[in-house]
Length: 121
Image (cartoon, rainbow, N blue to C red):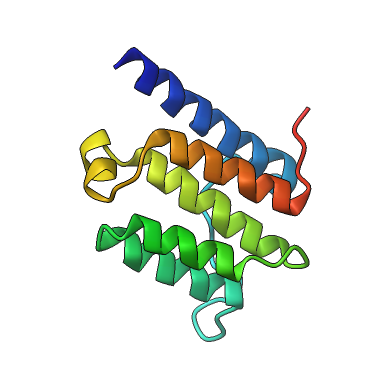
């Protein structure tokens, strides 16, 4: 249990650091960029990922995320950070039911950072 708590804190710290450094925000939560009437690609991806998370389809969400990432669109990085932040809030049981682990959350987050060339000090 202590290992899981430590890992949760590590993931939370990492997502918050990325949000602070890359987006100058104090939260890792994504906010729609297009408003109510005009959805951006990032807004649509965020909505789709949240729907998949509500259905417990975590792996499908991660697959969708990686298929949509575009290094030229930093808003998609913001969506990715939000996705892993939200995954980290799930209980161990919810992650297990979705065939996912905290280790996979951390690995996915690092993969996204690598794809975007994000290096934290």
